Length: 347
Ligand SMILES: [Zn+2]
Ligand SMILES: [Zn+2]
Image (cartoon, rainbow, N blue to C red):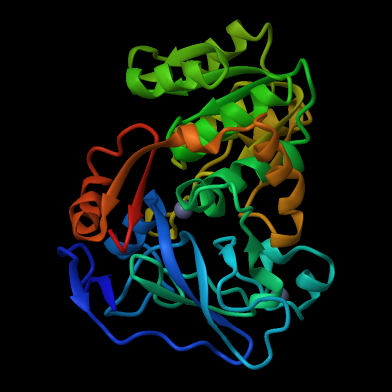
């Protein structure tokens, strides 16, 4: 099969011919029809993820068709249209037994713990626990966008953030996950303040339901701006970028008893992130993390997509062939762009 391979961190990846994967007894091999390009892939390529071994194939936001299933797989067969959360669970640890597969103790992540989906085929473990059926009327590009950023945003806003209609929700960082969060919060009836340094990203955020926007590039204190626009602070605030500055601004922009959800990754390579804990105690803030979404909690989200209340398809702003993936991966470091890019490995 053809795959995007890198041999060294930070050096150009290349499209190469490599061996086809084979399914584990409990796993499947999926023919990849669409796979999203995410900033986490860029972090992995840069060497920020200690779980990666070289040479490596990135890619973790995928949708496609089951090509082959291992002998212990009971729920899936070749030909099934599927997607998968980027956190693949073991199905048997204490976290999995409690229904919290998104924080599985023995999780695997395609594109990190093993070769990922910037390839024509990808192997996925514990298929009965992790695969999600893609409805026949949903495109693979749309389904691919669900696996990481959209589902992560859904869990952050709805499940962890407990958004309620009429609340103010601040979203710091309007890349793929931030724009998804804007759309999901607005659809839940919340009033959304979008914060970003890019006018293009803020324009998209407005399109997806943000009522107010803060241009972080031209604002000295974004948290103060959020507090002013929301009459005292957001009820719920997300750091959807993942940086010490956006994390602090998200916490500082909350009102009393507000909830901060950390969504953007804070790679360990950049050290420990300071959090304004004095404000957390004085205002009784809740500080929450959000890490993907368990496969079994997808149905309510898929129903909102099916009904048209949520439109992840609108977030996909570019579709590229596999040969364009290495350059697009490198470009994420300097020019992340607005919206999501999807790679189609067979085009
Ligand atoms: Zn587990
Ligand atoms: Zn991702």
